[in-house]
Image 1 (cartoon, helix red, strand yellow):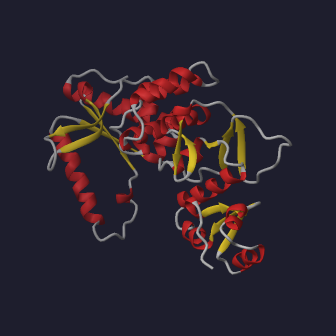
Image 2 (cartoon, one colour):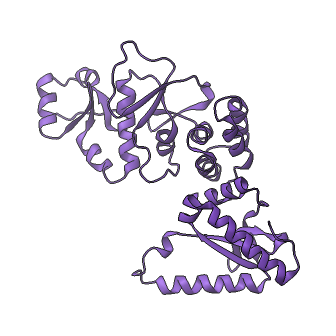
Image 3 (cartoon, helix red, strand yellow):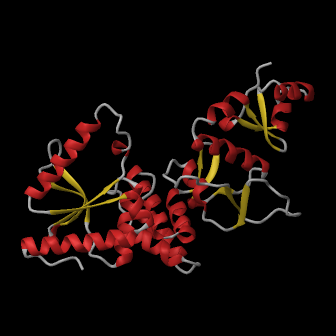
Length: 319
């Protein structure tokens, strides 16, 4: 028989029975791979489960839907679970486990393997239904991540949410105001203050967080230096007063030297830097790995190149 499966290909055994599937048919479907048991009393369409293996985000959505059903359709996904379900960038290896919150823990403290449960309160406006799973809204998710994992981690999510149009600056301010008195609430306020959809990658967001933390003058992000639009040149970071341009490398375009256009990409990048220098700026570069793991190295390099610009153009250095 054909079995119609619920949201994300996941449903409960009770729903299967209500649709006419007998216990014997259910066991046969599991044995033949048409159904996959995810949690006690919760099953997934076999084809959906196998297809979800292609992308960790898809697999996490399926597992989150199963977890929500196992919790009796209570609670909501939080933290990096909510981020990946909403399509926001997360670090490699995250989320390590499902993250859910409940308004109150169930009696008996039943164990839910692979799931971290917390008890929390939340405003109705801060919970959305995405892919059939209740999750904290992107603004709340970004600030929750900031409080738990740090300013830079939260800024990555907040910038991406603003850029995608799934959060607003006002939402960030509203949530940050409410969280300001919570543990590590100052991180949430910092993210809401500095979030900007102009930044186009996690590496840019992490770099900017490093500038804020180091107390450096803050640059304009993705600002035009030469012209506008096609044929123009933008910089990741521009300290116009200091005649300094910052560029964070590490994008996919540099990753594979065997790509047919690899040499052209490098030539184009060198030409681009030459145009920036001809416009009267000193360029400082760093990698995404340096921004994330060695921000002090990035700061020192920015300050050093700024002093070069100061000597060349008679402008004040950044620090």
